[in-house]
Image (cartoon, rainbow, N blue to C red):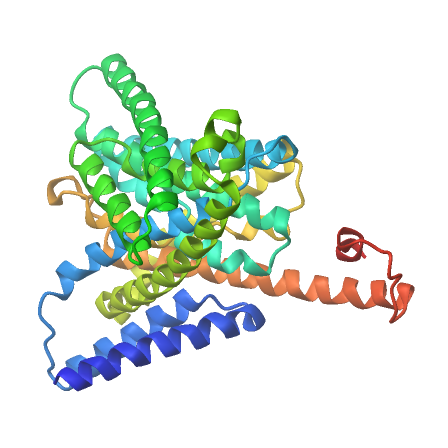
Length: 416
């Protein structure tokens, strides 16, 4: 039995790696394929009456680890500079305002038409209002650097905002003013603590001479995340700040810090840490989506009664997104309009809703259909973007010829 488990473990990683490579060409997210494989495995297990124990307990753990690693990997690739302030402001406003408008609009409809409690409505709507960085960030690798950074900022901030809002509404029992004050107080406290914690870990990463150090840093991050979550602090914010501090360490370079840290050696260690984070993230993310597919019922996925709700929800998601991009941000719809997939956070938050607060029409089937529709929309957008890009590139090459000026800079070549 042990060897069968090892073989299965290795095959999952190899297949996930193959799908991850081919997704750059097919534009089909590897997460979608892994979910479908998980559903197929569920059917096979049911046919042969195979029971795998504790699977329902493993899924939330894998999802939480995947979330930490995804946000960490994304934040380790983000650079803060004046030149990127427009991207950061645009992505931040898109993540926050679209989230608030979507939740407010659906909550208003649910309260007005179905006469449900406002808190119950918001708790059920928040999971489907969050853009999944677990799917959006890996799928954006084929985009330009500017668009890729926009997707990274928007989806990461959407994840954080969704978790903060969900925990706030779930635990909120007192007055609104006191709750908002407490929320921002905790946010500021977490920000200060995160900067101190990040500086300490950065120093440890640079000074530890033992051959085992990256795993220790990673363990400390997960531990702090879990402890912060237990005391209801915005724990994902800690991970984001850590990654930003690490990748933007030159902002802290001065006469005092140079006496303590050699920034050249530190950035070499940081590159190694990034590589390990990316590979761990790949493994955990692959198994999570496979397990989610295993728990997904095929009949829930094709249910017509659920489909009308799922299509309506997705229509509102993309309608609001189109209006915001065209009227406020004044950006072209292709390709960023399509990059609003739901996924890992949606699943985790939905599973965290207490049974007593779950709305009658909200079920796993609707959530799964929303995830699939938004992923398919992103896939469609990636394919359309690829076709447009293929039409533009040959024309550019024809104009410039097969040879380029040797003195031409890399930036100029990239814009040809």
